Amino acid sequence: MQAVSTIERRGYLELPLRRLQALSVLSAEEQAAVRGLQSIRVKRLKGETLVQAGSEPHFILEGWGCQMREVPPGRRQIFAFVLPGDAIGHLPHDTAEEGRFVYKALTPVTMVGAGVLLEISRDGAARAPGVRAALAAFRDTARSRLFDHVVRLGAHTAYEGTAHLLLELNDRMAQVGLAQEGRFAFPIGQERLGEMLGLSGVHVHRTLAKLKQDGHLLAGPGWFALPRRRELAQAVGYVAQAELHVRVPPE
Amino acid sequence: MQAVSTIERRGYLELPLRRLQALSVLSAEEQAAVRGLQSIRVKRLKGETLVQAGSEPHFILEGWGCQMREVPPGRRQIFAFVLPGDAIGHLPHDTAEEGRFVYKALTPVTMVGAGVLLEISRDGAARAPGVRAALAAFRDTARSRLFDHVVRLGAHTAYEGTAHLLLELNDRMAQVGLAQEGRFAFPIGQERLGEMLGLSGVHVHRTLAKLKQDGHLLAGPGWFALPRRRELAQAVGYVAQAELHVRVPPE
DNA sequence: CGCGGAGTTGAGATTGTTCAAGGATTGTGG
DNA sequence: CCACAATCCTTGAACAATCTCAACTCCGCG
Image (tube, rainbow over all chains, first blue to last red; front, top):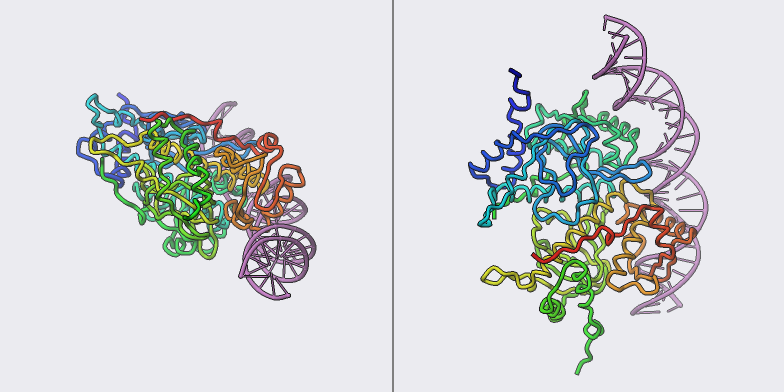
């Protein structure tokens, strides 16, 4: 008999559950339904497309992806990183945004489809209204992050923008319990970070070096830590999303 | 007896109507309701806030505004220009985006409040379902433009980004009939354009000069024209939004 | 007629890019 | 266990893009 895989033993579905519960109120049944998504697990290799446009929502369980666009010739722009616990795919009330970007895996990624949670029964009642509300709220937080990103690209120096992005990633990883002792996993390369920040990989490297010099960044193989987060946030004008946050009740 | 003002004589409400009809199907009653918004006209001076966060939707009738954020110290980032015919304010299904930006007038602006069109009667039926659908679709097109903007800031040179933005503005002005003989009004300064494109005003000027040299741009006091639009669009990878467009039927 | 705002231009400083090469790390097959 | 390839990180040097500062022009307006 084969051993149960790591990802099944540890409750990886706790990640999206934690994120959803930060955004709305889930009934006991809804919580159970989220935990029950185990069966329909999907895997993607590095570089593969995560979900097609218009596809049902998926939760990321493991690995990093991105929302991006290819800009000929040979350039690409990353709009957002997709982290474990995040939801992607077609959420309620999306329309015209489809087709202006694609989702790609930056590392091997494990997901589960969550479309089943959004089913509407014949009498018009949503199966999981709290999940639906949380997904809509999640989509809105993802969108509002895009405004921060525009500021990083348009009004920040390389130093500010890099620090601002690392602060955001630190917060998001911590929100789903993926930051221990102040460290969070950073499984992608400097070139990818550059495609997010609109910088060359070389300059990203020099910027990270300066952050380390200034005592704002610790790095090891595959992880980062921001030892003086408060001070750095103050310095580059970072405002945690939680500080703007409104919890959305189900309809 | 006082003369009827210019803006009342000419049917300025045709502008938002034209835009809404490009996005959804409006019944004759709905069209009449849009034209009937005349009474509740609102004016703003240059620099004033257009609408507060969470305010009812407004249509812009005259003048330009922007969606922006102040970035201390003294910098600002514009996320989008707001043109005549556009809708701003709280549209259906908005939540978390509020508070991450403000709307400001870049010239004197005339608007009308349109909240009355979104009223829901006691039996749960929307008064103007087509308008509601069109506003939701409009909000989505506005959002999808933000992805283009990220590309301009992150992956384009000054030349490409400037050309790309001018192409977008030309298209949007033409869509509501505000481009005659290929010319469209451009009532704001190079400094503001720079705050959109993440460039200094001086560099915007040099970039515009280069576009003129290359025969891609004609400019006079308060207007621009793009005489070789097709070619320029091809050169900088501009894709008109209409080409991606799906017309949304009322629910 | 004079003032203020916006456009224009030049020169030099800064920031970020490109190219190139060497070092470290990891996974793979012999 | 070693050799090798592939990938990423690191560093230097030259180059290009863009910014800042400063001066000057042009224009509309009171």
